[in-house]
Length: 298
Image (cartoon, rainbow, N blue to C red):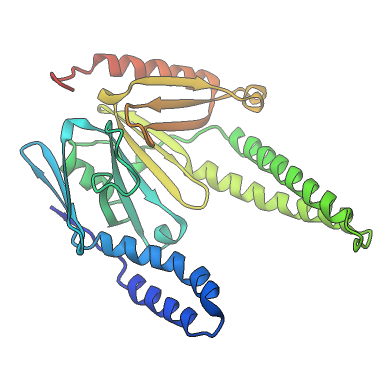
C-alpha cells in the first residue's frame, strides 16, 4: 500500500500568494496572472491527498481525492512501462514522481491510474516497481553511458538554434528606427557568451543519459536540468526503431526508440549511441522480446 506525501507548504504558499495578489491594489488581471499558476498547483496537490495504490488479486487499485473521490482498476499485466520524473526543483529536494503507462487510450496526464506515487524519496522507484510489477534486477547503477560525441552534437544543435533565434531578434531590432547601430555586435556577443553554457548543459545531459538491459526489462534515463527514467517490460515491446539524423550520421551516431502500446509516453528513446552499438541493441531487444511468453489475453 502506498500513500502520497504532497509537499505541505504548497497549499499555504499558494493561498498567501493569491491573497497578496488580490489585495495588492493592482487589479483583477494582476491577481489572475500571479495567482492562477499557484491555484492550479494547489488544486493538483489537493486532488492527490489521500492517494492510495494497492494490489488486489493481480489488480492495481488507485484511490485518491478529497472533494471528489476517484478510483480506478487495472490488471498488473496491462502495465506497459513505469516512468520516473525528477524535475529540477523536485529532484533537488530529493523527491521523484512515479507513473504507470497502460495501453488504455483514455489515460490522460491527470488520470488516477497514471500516477503510481505522487511523491517518493529519490531512488525509491525500485522498491515500488518490485511491489507493483515483478522483481526488477536493474538499477541506475547498471546504466551504460552513451557516446561522448553526444556532447559535441548537442552543443552544435543547441548553438544552431540559438543562432537562428538571435539572428531573428537582431534583425527585428536592427530594423527599428531607435537602433543605435550596435545591435548586431551585441547580438553576436550574446550568442558567443551562450555557447559555453550550452556546452556545460550538453555535458550534463551526457552524464545523465544512459541505458541498461537485462532480466526482462529495459531501463532508460534522460535529462538536462532534471531527469526522467523509463522501465520498459520486454514483454510489452511492440517495435524497436533505429534512426539517425543528418548530424548523427556525420558522427556515426544513432538513436534507439523502444516503443510499447501505451499511447502517451509509450516510447523510451536512447539517444546518441555509436551506430554499431545501436543496431546490436535493437537486434538484442527484438530477440529478447520475441522469446517472452505472453499469457492469454495480454
